[in-house]
Length: 213
Ligand SMILES: Cc1ncc(COP(=O)(O)OP(=O)(O)O)c(N)n1
Ligand SMILES: Cc1ncsc1CCOP(=O)(O)O
Ligand SMILES: [Mg+2]
Image 1 (tube, rainbow, N blue to C red):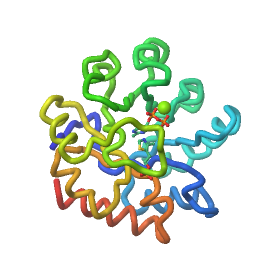
Image 2 (tube, protein in one colour; image 1 turned 180 degrees about the vertical axis):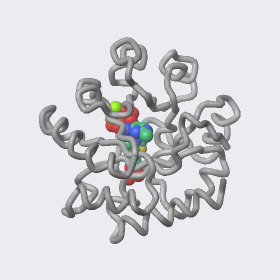
Image 3 (cartoon, protein in one colour; image 1 turned 180 degrees about the horizontal axis):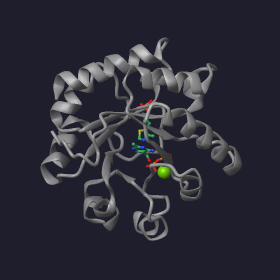
């Protein structure tokens, strides 16, 4: 288990307004934070650039009240203009090299690892955390390549010391196993945002993480 002071986060909420099932987006995220989310990524793939920026600025204002950092998915311009804490990119996005060159203020740079060979890329080496994407196949994101599974989490854990984030169908039932396999932080969309009680769902997952540490 990694106790990196630069990446102390354990429960990472990744947003998708659709997953809130018609409820108010900001209220659902706030409930999740009250339940134990300590890092949030805004991932709203269907918004225009202007609407994404506006939503990011509003979310930052909310999260600042709880001292919870906000990471922006994909969009470097929005991340910079909102003075977000960081950015998450995958293999079809602006590269970590370009981000490091363009944004000195990037505090958290996340990178999606979709295949073990990508560990050798500068992308992985420049990232502050590596997301195993996905640990389990999920209807929330279907354009994925493999499932890492618990065995994949353990294998990558044995190869790198960097903080490891597990994402993909994470819930209270599989959270402890993922942490025991070597994940430092669990990233969740639907098990929190679509839960009848998002605060309770976050609390349940957080409790499983803490018990397994
Ligand atoms: C924490 C976290 N892990 C993985 C992803 C997926 O990123 P990416 O591969 O770039 O896919 P999209 O999110 O852009 O569809 C993520 N966003 N966050
Ligand atoms: C953004 C992302 N990247 C890999 S899986 C995924 C979605 C995870 O969603 P859920 O927690 O609902 O399975
Ligand atoms: Mg991306």
